Length: 209
Image 1: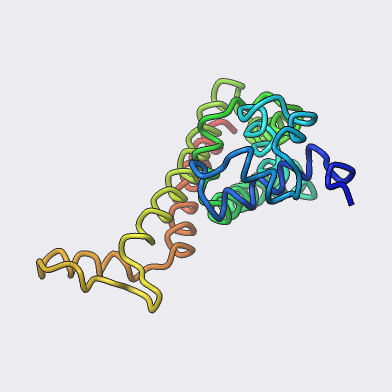
Image 2: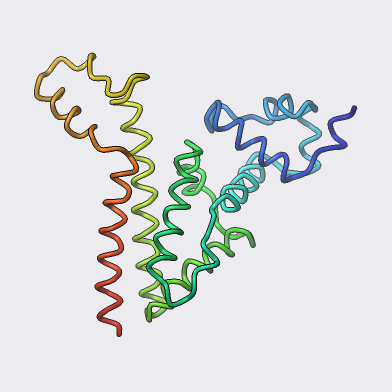
């Protein structure tokens, strides 16, 4: 069967994201993607203009994976923000290249703007002005992206297949440092950091009442 009959922009983006998870963003190429889909690379250009356009499609795919709590009422801002940031963090940790893709591509598609609009509305529901909402939103997103980047990076440094791996560190003080800072799980660190974000937002919200 001709693989081109089953191609679509969504399928190409989904496959590109999966391939990126395996080989990294630098390892993604139209040739490898075509081979993964069982088609010649040139067939992909009927659906994406070039690699930049492909990465925009992958970015859209990542935004689609953020499971936003649309069911939470507007006045339950804390629950909505907790669940929304957690959903964002889950996507970042699930896809190692996601942080780089989110920070290097413009968020201007309808899919991206739908997510961003939801987030800004949640902050505005706390009584913030648009300018205050922008600051609060960017602060919260910076925390999540920073946590995910740090978690992925530190995991590569201090975790082996059987847990903490510090056998290659000769300095006793440095070994102890890694052991102490490697005790908390990524989930525990995220929850602690998220609580600090919420405390700060709650203080701001109280002042705006």
